[in-house]
Length: 319
View 1 (cartoon, rainbow, N blue to C red):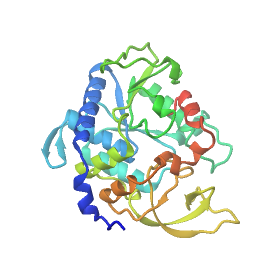
View 2 (tube, rainbow, N blue to C red; view 1 turned 45 degrees about the vertical axis):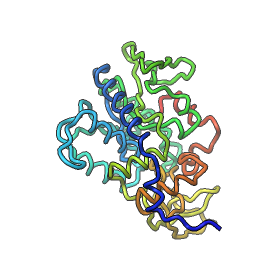
View 3 (spheres, rainbow, N blue to C red; view 1 turned 90 degrees about the vertical axis):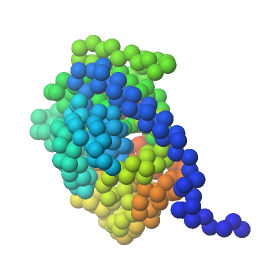
View 4 (cartoon, rainbow, N blue to C red; view 1 turned 135 degrees about the vertical axis):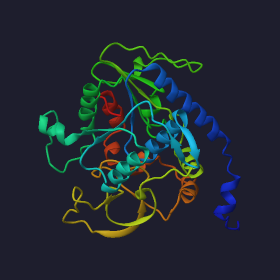
């Protein structure tokens, strides 16, 4: 029988040298965006991937003062599409982080799209995740953004595995996987016509494990939802659905309190936690080493509608 391995003994044995290469590549991509495009923006939701990209942007464009303190300004604003159904803890963290950094935050509010009539809901409690596309494209048009920097990774989902690091979008904001441009020897074709734009993904080649190793190494602050906490949930279709104002229990469902954490955060109507006792990034690294399902596959109800649901949304202009 194998003896139990103490986590403190295990983590130092993990080779972190690949993180230096991934970091170098991401910083190169961020600087390429700043040098190539006139009006880029960084998508910042307060989620773990966007927090990692934000730290990489600090390293790319700011001067480190000490520890995790940087001085200077980013050469682009931050952009968040608020569905109105985001977890309050994440919105509070987003605003606090932006205030600490002194950066400019542009918020595209889905409620404004509803008021304009460009988004129509069949039910007030339906998931607004897919409707974000309309608000995002309206924000791009209003602010004339020509490149959005995102935290999508290829290991998350099949459609995202098809993405380029520089992903071209047509004048309708749509993504056509068969028309993406080759990226050989880190040479990027970023030419685009008026009205078109790009999405750039500096951490495309990272995995969920890489993200958590980097968060642990860099001591990157995150919303508390990512770590173990007690929450009321209901079990529905193999998932733990958090009990909130927009996800109330049905008549035949039982509410229980469980110790959970979120592997990804998004619209409350489609984002589910997993049972976990991981209280810090080191615990999550050890837990991630054993999982066999990506965070989206394990926690996102909207990705379970069909194998092509994400690809369909991306073709319509989704993140």
